[in-house]
Length: 151
Image 1 (cartoon, helix red, strand yellow):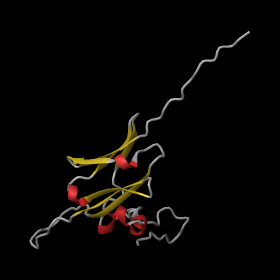
Image 2 (cartoon, rainbow, N blue to C red):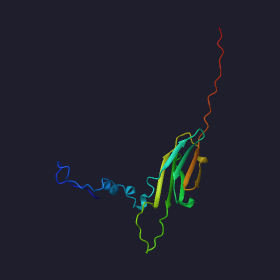
Image 3 (tube, helix red, strand yellow):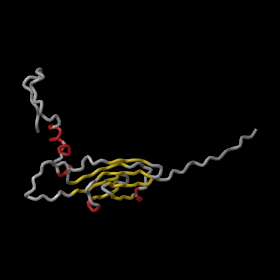
């Protein structure tokens, strides 16, 4: 962990101008550093929208194969998307200049509302985008009966 130390807290010029202000944060949260295998997609981007018919989740999983992804429902109402992106094979003669793409395990959990049909969940992976569709229970509108008023 890198902590920038000041000799004099009252001297505004006694700190390192080139120190990364997020360095301490990266050592605490491995996903922010980009070099941890276990936190590869800790912040995988997922969109959740609700349509009149369903809840639709879309997750960007570029480079992940269908066999490397699991979609499950836990405890009756928690949607779990998990998996693993394999690390690219390295050749000993390769010289890496910059690495941003991550590899490793990922997991995301979403508590579903009560109006979902968890037994009818569908998922598909196309062009690096996982789409999970959770149909909604049809809400029956209450029947209204007009009553004649006598008198």
